Length: 74
Image (cartoon, rainbow, N blue to C red; front, side, top):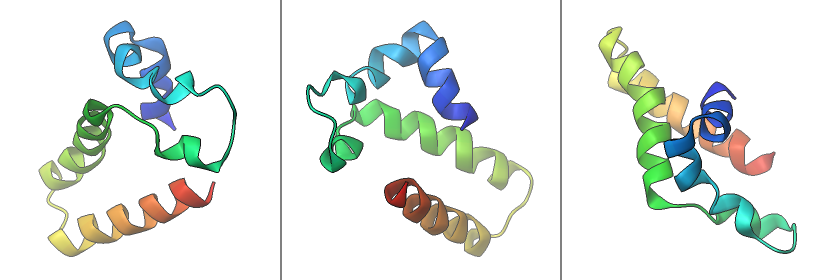
């Protein structure tokens, strides 16, 4: 949630995130419309702190899987 808030509030991040909001009709496929740099930002801000704190690769993988499922099911 905080990363998404940053995407809206930080101008250089909004430049990437606004692609997601450029759809003209709100539907399920809009969730998959995004700028590729948004993935870099999300993954970096999510997984790098876990790795820096010493989380095992298995934990990072589970965070990725569960986070992706929750994100798409929302």
